[in-house]
Amino acid sequence: MRGLLPAAFVAASIAAVLGAGTTGAAPILGKGSVLPEGTELNEEALDQPNELFASELAGGKRSYLLNLGDLLFSSPEILGGLARQAGISCNTCHQQGHNNPRLYVPGLSTRPGTFDTTNKLFNPKSDNGVLDAVTPPSLRGARYLAPYGHDGRFASLRDFVRNVIVNEFAGPEPSGEILDALVTYIQEISFLPNPKLGADGRLTAQASAAARRGEALFAAPFRHDPAMSCASCHRPTGAFVDHQTHDVGSGGRFKTPTLVNANFNAPYFHDGRFDSYAQVVAYFDRHFDLGLDADQQRDLVAYLEAVGDAAEPVVRNTVQSTLDEIAAFVSVLDIAIPEHNREIVALTVDAVGNEWRELGENFPGRGDTSVNGGLSERLRAREAARGAVLALRRVAMAAAAEDFAAAAQAFADYRQHVASAAADLKQAEPWSLYNPAIRAAHFAAIRRLAELAK
Image (cartoon, rainbow, N blue to C red; front, side, top):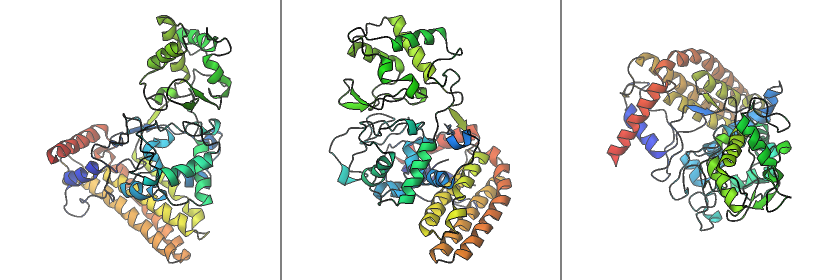
């Protein structure tokens, strides 16, 4: 779920749709928003970008730092000012560690999928007075893609992460543990498997004939400079990057982006000026005088599409997948409570509490006319989610009082509640927003209410 419901009109309209009523009917959503009207955070999406971790792909398990980083990535509490108030987290711009092609904040975005990271709205101290929106990139394979930032100003991923927290979003200085966890999480995010691309960066037999012709063009020397080719910057054996910045006529020097899984990274270029590979290829053909005819351009596009593909780019959100993610997040308390780590306990309880609130909001209440049937099941599911939030609060209260024995007992009670709550949540799933038809009807009702409120 990853905190995709902080937009102001969503919070207000859900309250209107759900209404107030008997126990279990009132909204669970805890935070409103102070973002500009017209903000789009892609909150309606049910299918989410697939997120695979290197340790699990290798047959291992998630570490404490990975789970902590994953949790912090979804936590507004590590940011500051307006971002925290609005419920914005790292995951808002990088959904499931990927990107957010529909992200749009009026005054900060030049088009969907772009965002000005130096603005007065989130941190006046970092405002450069220019609308210079960039595309929040996918973080898949980030461990191979240094330097960091579109202009490559950060050699260290750790320095880049700190800059995002402190300078871009006015957050407090993060502890070493928080930075370690976030870096671990980002470095664990893997490229998605692509059966058309071999480990050596060469196309496999599953690629089309057009793509293989494009592969030859990709490696061919430019006619004006035999020392250059597409592959000289996008090196197939090196995750299709060269770890350098280049001026390709787009307004400055920017680092070479990877082409792996790039089918899902649009819009393209640092400022998102291009919607498609065809536009990108046409631009390079003009700028570098490549002399490509129409057939060659199509073959080069076919090659990029083959390199940029993935076997399973998105996955469907379900009750079980949400419970699994919550379980991974909350497992951080297995370490934080015995270590008497009050900061991490507080951050975990806050982030997981938000996840439970959003889970509960996926079960429409009594006043929501966008769904028929399953009312008793939906109300039980909402109560189950609310009970989990309350159980977690007891953990945080005990830890804040430095009674870690009580915190451990409260955590055990929380787990017992979740074990029994899971059945109620799954039973209500057919009448929830995990059902695509009900989700569509629900958000259509929200949009109608938003229009009436104007």
